[in-house]
Length: 252
Image (cartoon, rainbow, N blue to C red):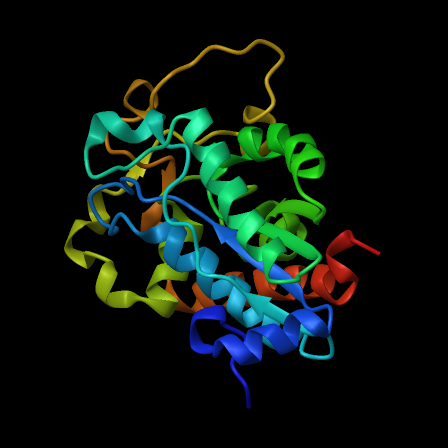
């Protein structure tokens, strides 16, 4: 069976996919601290895995998953170390360069799939620029918000994905257990946001770092994590994204 991953296809195969009006999935993530127990590549690992599985589930459509953009908007994590971040102009320029490359190869539709909360505001703000500066039809979604209802039944004391928490740690235990420092799990907890989605859209905005919110770098409680729950979270995420891809990525 032919791979859905851009990097595993030949240039000829990608030209053929473009000619067949394939939908391109562009995963975007981050490289940032995830508490004392998780490797810094969590968002990149998880977003890439969810996109690949979703594309495989939606094989009735022509889909190709581009390489994951591993750096994003992560200034708020810099105080903990281990983090890379873009500023707004650089992030916009990098994304636009990637989209223009996709456009020049003859593709017409792109779904940007985000795996990092800090990218959400920037991606929303960039969409008019992408529409004006390319001929592509582009939508953007954040997979764990798209899958919120499907993931909720498997959470013990969270209402959504937080940070280095029960959800992210469980998912990493399921697909990349070697990147979880199990001996540090007893200290991997922090003050939980009562409603993480509402916290992303406050009535009054003020910048604060994660250091202002948590001493451990964790929001939530990773001690609740298990590989079994992780498999459920991954499946729910992939199913929600696959449904969007089957619908043409919202780009009918």
